[in-house]
Amino acid sequence: MGDLPRLSRQFSQRSVMEAIVQGGPISRASIAKQTGLSKQTISEIVRALEQEGWVQETGRTSGHVGRTAVTYELVYDAAHIVAVDLGGTKVRVALTDLACQIFAEETAPTDPRGGKFVVDQIVALAFQAAARQRISRRKIRLAVIGVPGAPDQNTGRVLLAPNIADFDQMDVVGAFTRAFGFGVLIENDVNLAALGEHWLGQGQGIDNLAYIALGTGIGGGLMVGGQLVRGASNAAGELGFLPIGADAYDPESLRVGAFERAVATHAITERYARISGRRASVPEIFENAAAGEKAALKVLDDTARHLTQGIAALAAIANPEKVILGGSIGLRPEILARVRALLPECFPYPVTVEASELGSHATIIGAAAIGLSQLHNTLFGVDAPEGRISLPPVNAGPLREAVL
Image (cartoon, rainbow, N blue to C red):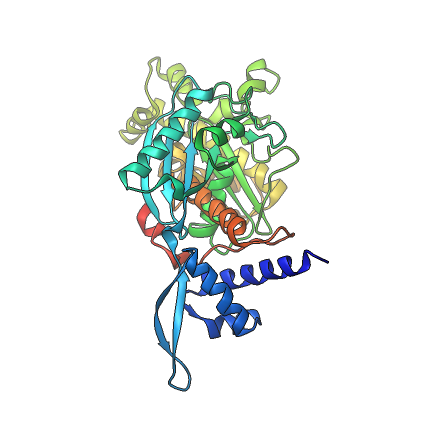
């Protein structure tokens, strides 16, 4: 019984913060109407939150009978989140506030040595971005790292991540936590991109969607009923291991995946070398195709054909309303046009396929979203099922405008 007053207070605080996050600027009277709490309780909670620096007065508004009421909103820069998109060739680090506004961003080639070197690189980039914007380290409360693989919650390792050396052999979560000095969440990068698109991009209002990122590798994020599908070991959406496109029994397919061997960067450059007899980068191959070169056009046709088969397989299992393509290759209009033309030839039901609206920032936005939800819950929530504070409205901050 001794915990009941404390839990009641926590639930009340969570309700007040939910109202402020969703409706600010908002008056105490409006909070009372939304929460059903007494005005005295609300006044005590708001006063405490104001003293701790989490909410602030924003002005006054006229009441229904001519009286004015003080309005309150969240102090968005009271805490910051590190949002990271770690790829096999490039890492992007951003600092966001409690409204998911991006304050600073740093991008660099991923350290090819992998392991602890990548951890140290990301931490250095984050603190470098904070220093550049004069953001105090003590205000950075959480980091969300999007990784190209399947995080193992029991060991902290990241499995199925062949493009980042040693992440499958070390406690990645522990290494980041020690290096940062605050809480760290690890999530699959494409899952985060799916969340980002669902919140601010092509997936707004769509509860059943798939996000496919095609570039150095290939991965998928899947939302069913508005919930992210992670699977038993956080490996749902590892499309690279679909047993199509290449020999699934080849030992190399066990390392990087048969499907990835057919559609990702290395597959495209090798296919072009075989057909044309010379080497070229992926951007050069697209340029050659635009110039009408038959070898390059053949490579794009074959790549799109394989990719379409993967989309059809995903659609047959999950039945998404929309499939969103991202990644440096997936965003190319040449690929999108071919996939749209080919899909009706190999799948009997219509599937909407679109290019990502958020582009290279989709994972960063998803990391900011999940970090914001986690941080709000940690600061103002309760240890109870579904005790999470929801995300602010899309227009709560200029995040979307900042990345488009």
